[in-house]
Length: 224
Image 1 (spheres, rainbow, N blue to C red):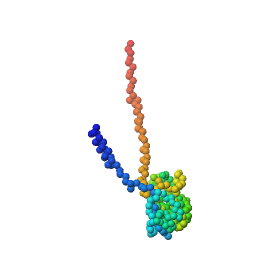
Image 2: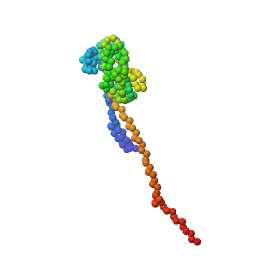
Image 3: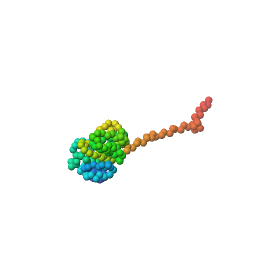
Image 4: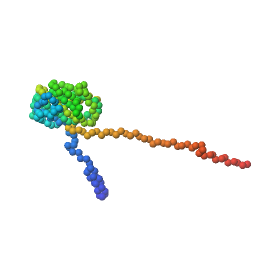
C-alpha cells in the first residue's frame, strides 16, 4: 500500500507544476481611470493635443456617474474650470445596436475604439445628449472589450458627468460597474459549430441474375 502512494504523489506534483499561475495584476480591475486637470483648454480639444494643465487627481473609479454640484471633482482640485479624463474598457453583455447618453455639465466627448460616439463639447447644464440620433449607433459584440475614452470639462457653477446606455433588449440605464474594466478582458472563445453527422451507408445486396440462379433439382422418375 505504501509503494502505491509514491506514483500517485508524483502525478499530483507534476500536475501542480504545470498548472497556469494567475497573478493578481493579470486580472482586469473593475472600473475606469479618472484623471482631473486643474484648468481647461480653449480652441483644440484635449483629445487633439496633450493638455498642458497640471493633474490634480488620478485614480480608479467604479462607474461614470457623478453629480458634483458645486464641489470639486476630487479633493485637491478646483470647483470650476477643470477637465476630467476617463479611460478604460467597456464590455457589454449582448450583441447588437447600442447608443449612449451623456449627462454632463459642461462638455462631453467620447470615443469607443477610436470611433467618435458622443460629441457634446460645448457649454450647457446637466442635460442629456443621445449618441444615436446625433453621432450614430454602435454595433457591439457581447463579451468583446472596447477601448473607452471620455473627456469632459466644467466651466462654472454645477458640474456632473454620467454615462448611460440604450441596449437592444436591456432598455436604458447608467453603465454599470460590471461592464467597465481598466484593461481588456480576454477575447471570448468562439463556439465550434457541430459537424454534420454521417450515417453509415448501407449498400443493397445484389440480386442474382437469371443465369446465376440455381436450377431446381430434376424430379426423379419413378419406373413401374
